[in-house]
Image (tube, rainbow, N blue to C red):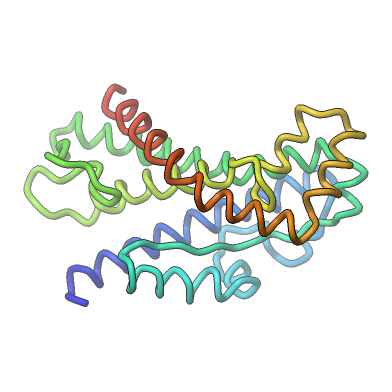
Length: 228
């Protein structure tokens, strides 16, 4: 792998870890505010990535770096524990907890969008001839780590938000739809979709559906970014 690719991979990993940490810390904080201190007791109400890495070292280190080395694409995961008893007693609180992670990714994407537009307005950035995952904006004077960082921050968080909102187990969207059910129905839904076969089917469905959903969402987000 050439030095430029290594530099891009390092930058991407920083963004990936930041985005994942904010996502899981938001889950943990929302659960704590809703009365479940399971994740807080594990030290996960924090923007320090180390507790999240210790909980999921394969998903936060090995898989992201290996996927980038093999495919120039960074994949991975982390998790925040919660009490299943608490979820059963308070399904709506659990649904809000599930939404907190994607909401954190949306906020990071908005921050990136604001900074990109500041750079465009200041004449420091320009819109590139072709849009890629790591080149939503580019520096006027050539290569710029800041332009790449903001590009990846924007696209990575649109990706994490979109993927996690898919309404299939075990993703956040599957729990979030409890907001649109009665508490009795939500409890039954959670009990059903927590079974291992349903979670496996959900991941398979998410894998096949995501490409069809993500790219239109990203194109819309980029158009909105430039329109603002």
